[in-house]
Structures are given as C-alpha cells and as structure tokens.
Image 1 (spheres, rainbow, N blue to C red):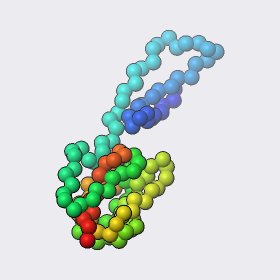
Image 2 (cartoon, one colour):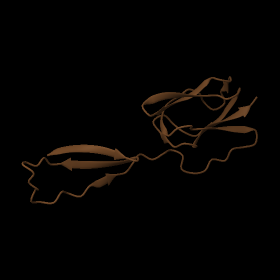
Image 3 (cartoon, rainbow, N blue to C red):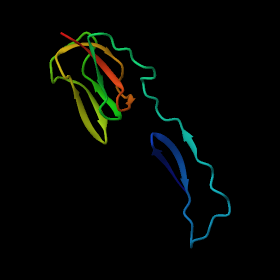
Length: 124
C-alpha cells in the first residue's frame, strides 16, 4: 500500500493506492477519500479603495513569497513591491507609477487569486 497527497484545483486529498497482482481485484473496497481543507486566501472581504488610490491586483493566482514594501513607504515607478510565485516561477510585481504605499492587504505565504487586491498606492 502506498500513500500520496494529491492536490486538485486547490483541494488536497489523501490517497491510498494498493498494488494488485495478476489483475486480481482486492476483496475489500477502497477506503473513501477524505478532502483536507485547502489553505485559505487572506483576503476574504471586498477591499474599499479610497479616492486617489490605485489598487495593485494579482495578475496570476499564486503564493506571495515576499513583500518588499510597508504602508507609508514612498516607491518609484518600476520598483518591486512584492514577489508572487505562480506556475513555479517567481514573478515580481512592480509599481506602475511613483507613489506612497497606502495599505497592504496580503502577507507572505498567502494564496491569492487573479484580481485580488494586494496593496494600494496613493499618487504623489
């Protein structure tokens, strides 16, 4: 008997696999597969973006690896704001314009979906 953890569409399953000999079907039925809860995304409620603030949204679904800025920090256009791991690649999310980081709505290790607001920038 071999045991595996399989993730399908964000849900993790514990799977037991039994090897059969000579095409024989085992006498006992296979145990039921039980789903483990998937890690929850940090952002659960809609984010209210204030006037003059620009939301920086996740372009890909993935995991936040590192946040490089803090609220109140001034950033330049093209500066790396955070690193997002998606499709086994690290993607740098950069500031589209100069501004001040207003709020950060995620944390390192969080799972995000496409379009989730990661942080907001206020124009200078």
